[in-house]
Length: 227
Image 1 (cartoon, rainbow, N blue to C red):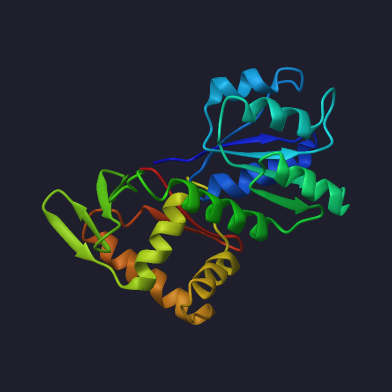
Image 2: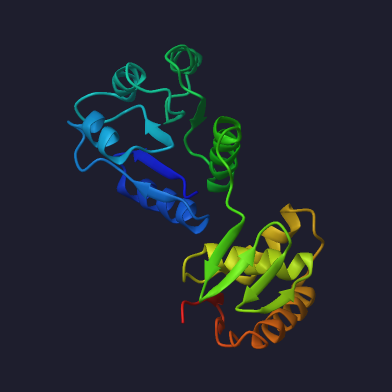
C-alpha cells in the first residue's frame, strides 16, 4: 500500500526537500494549496501521516492539530525551529506523535516517519507481496523476480539494490546512496562490491528481457527506468 504523507510547511525549500526524500521511498506526498483551509485539504487528501510545521501563516500548527484531532487520529509529526521544552510538551499533549526540531537531517526524519507508519499501520494493514515493474513481478517475500513463466532468484544484495532503484520512481540513485542504504541495512559493501552486484543483477535481468531497464548515468549513479 502506498502511504500518503500530508506536509504542512510554508518554507517551499523544506517542503520540496521532504517531498523528494519521501517520494524516493515510494510515498505519495501532498500539501495544502493555501494555509487558510488546511483542514479541508486534509479531509480531501486522506493522508496516512501529517508532517506539520508549528509556525505557519494565518493559524499555527497547534491550531490545525486541534482541528484535526477532533475528527481523526492520523499520526502527526511536528517540525519546528522553536526548541523550548514547553512547545514539545504542548505538542505531545495535543496528540502529536513526535516532535523534530529544525534544522534536522532528512535521514532522521525519514526514519521517524517510517517508524511511525510501522507502529500505526503494522496491524490490520497487509503489506504488499509483489511490486509490478516493466511487466515483471518482484516477489518481496521470496526475493525473486518473475516474468511470465520465468523466475530469477536474486541474492540479498541484488534484491535490495533492485528494490531501492525501483522505488526511486525513475529517478537517479547515486552510488554513495546505494552504498549507504546497503550499509544501513547491515550489509557490508564497498564501491567495488556494488559494481559487481550491479553487473550480476543486470545479467539476471537480461534473462527476462530487462537488460535495458537499469541504466548507468555517468558521474551520477543508476536509474531503474520504465520501458
